[in-house]
Length: 201
Image 1 (tube, rainbow, N blue to C red):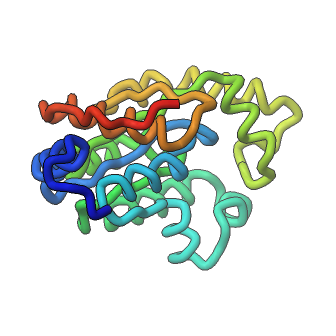
Image 2 (cartoon, rainbow, N blue to C red):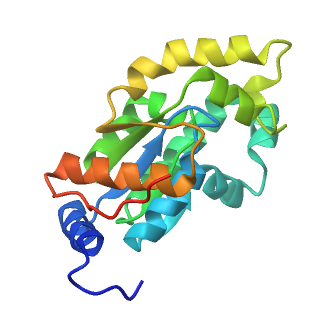
């Protein structure tokens, strides 16, 4: 991290952090879009702490997300998720990855708008299916036809995700490449000259 001060990425990152102030960079999007993986990379690039709302929920409740869904149902889980995100947002700046359903809550969207900048990682269905099929911890996908569930979630959620401050298409590429594109998109959002030294695939 000890780059020369004249390094363009450092200058643009410093300017971006100056515009960000105490706000958080909040990743939204469907499960499998890469919010946690890309969020960690962006946090590392900008020297910010990283938080994952699902991990915070599990830490607070001492139960896994699938267990919470099973025991209390989705409405109770969403209420807990909202409380956790509102609390986390009070302690910016940071990078926060949220669960796929979090941004669907109007109150959560309002809190994110007030305390952060939202970044939608927009993914195509084949990428999502490829990623989520490798994990068994997705409560909403306990279905005979997970692809139909994902298609339904995309139909319901993508119009809401589209209201995020920044949209970055994601794909099957190196995390560093997508993270650099997110940082450049944020620079564009804040009117900061983007870095010229972004990672190329």
